[in-house]
Length: 185
Image (cartoon, rainbow, N blue to C red):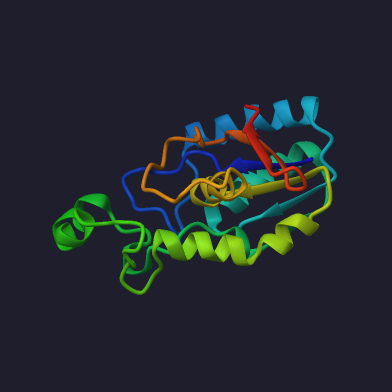
């Protein structure tokens, strides 16, 4: 079995994507609790993490408890929101109001990617995911975990970010051979 955890809470006043935002104090505490649960309930032998700061911080906290090999991979990055990465949401709403009010699955962020682009990035790297050894923990983002839900459940892509329950520090069990994914914490 492979497991995926969404990074801990970051500052929601800024747009995520490929931003350099760090975890909040609550985010750090939530990751510590998740780390204890992982240590006590799963047999993790290595960690592969997104190389975006909030995921790296999450993986480093978890690895403080597990002490297993840790590597970073850009395949696990969130959707690239281009010029909006890390932008204050209030500024984004003023500067990109028309754009933000008309986002669909094929809307490409300025200098970034669309949700469908993220989906394609994950599907194009499915061989990578399928080759990951059992007992690996992926530290990644809601967008990536959501894409795995869409792909493994053969569900049509839509704009509903919350339907799979991928909250901060949530943990999901993935069985690529049997095309199963479920939230375990």
